[in-house]
Every structure is written in structure tokens, then in C-alpha cells.
Image (cartoon, rainbow, N blue to C red):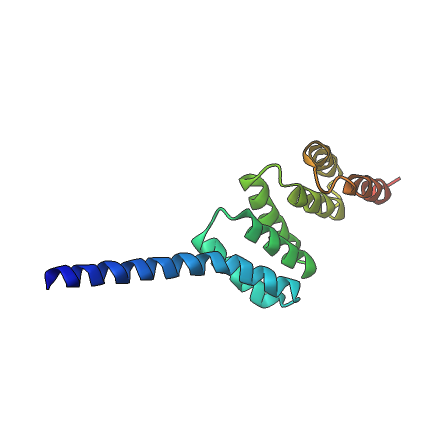
Amino acid sequence: MKKNYFITIIFLLTLFLFKNVYAKNNYFLEGKKLFLNKDFDESKFKFEKDIVFNPKNEKSYLYLAKIFKLKDNDDLQEQNLNTVILLNPKNEEAIYLMSLLKIKQSDYQKSKELIKIFTKVCTVLCEKEKELNEKLKNSQPR
């Protein structure tokens, strides 16, 4: 009798833990799906939920930064981009977005530094370097 009780408890605990692990992994995927469907408020909620369970998921921070970029909230965009770059200093998309933000904020020195870093780490978005340099050039006072 005790053996069956023990096996039942183990089974229920395993089921509960599996369900929690599965749910944790789904928050990012659900958030990305909502983001692609332009439901930014709901996707923001899912990415924040993912961060609660997985604070080192740079992708959730990156998508939050994209949401705040769309909502024109520079402070929260910068905060999330800084977190992405802290977690992964070679995340080229975060460096690219941070470069654009710094150009927008007229922080030309930081923009130049970020563009240099971007040039060194880019593998997928390398064609964006020219765009960054043009935006920097056109935004500086003459």
C-alpha cells in the first residue's frame, strides 16, 4: 500500500514539474507569435512572464526592446537593449538597435563606438553597417 502511495506521489510531482517546465518554455514562443501578429501589449506580457522564469533569455529582452521602440519609449528600449548586450555582447541586432537609438538621441560618440563593435561582430546584418554610417553622417550637425 505504501509503495503505491509513494509511486503516485512521484508520478504527480513529475507531472507537475514537467507541466511547469513546458509552460516556461512556451511564454517566449507565445510572445513571439503575438508580436508577429502585432498584438504588442499581450506579447509584452508574455515576454515579461518568460523573463520571470528565465531571466537570462536575451531574446525576450530583445523583443521587449522592439516593442518599446514601436511605442517610442526610448528609456525602456535602452534598458532592455543594455540587458541584451550585457547577457550577450555579440548580439548584433541589439547593437544595431542601440546604434540607431544613440543616433536618435544625438549621442554621436557612443554611436560611433557601437558601429565599430557592430562591424566586428556582424554575421547576419552586415549590410546594415552602411545604413548606420549614413544615418550617423546625416544626423550630425554640420
